[in-house]
Image (cartoon, rainbow, N blue to C red; front, side, top):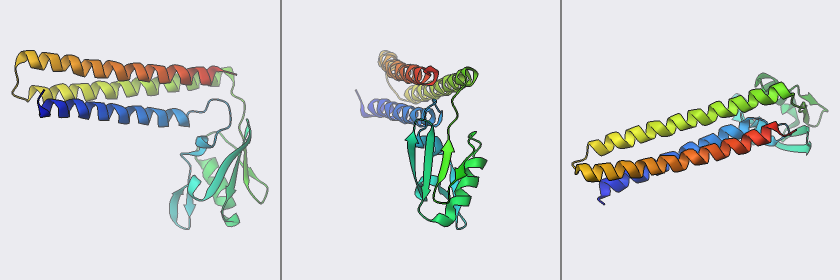
Length: 184
């Protein structure tokens, strides 16, 4: 197989891996009932005029299955952190005890679990669309090469095999996330 074809296949695999990594990151931000420090991964704080991710100005941990604690490295940041969490629109109402910010994670209702499962399904579908776009782009690049129709046909089959493999991985990730969300 010539180098150009191998490059197309390798690029497709690399893009698919990046797509899967993005899906995993998105799934981490969808809460599944238990308190998890990654729930705050999207929160940024105004740290002396610079917007900074929360995990760079504080230690985030869980006390139990329903409580997250945020221990700022500078006590003067408690108010900023509290406001940032409240403004992040995550549905949390943080409080502070003068030393740290405490977030009680409410138990999910059945309706909220179903909504989160739908959100996870939509994210999985978006990821599949991204994969299909990568496939289309790879086939377009293949068509621009000066190769025989038989070879082109065989490479298109190889491309589809790669896409099918990653589609299956997406489905498996979604099934795990849905089970995690729906488990009380």
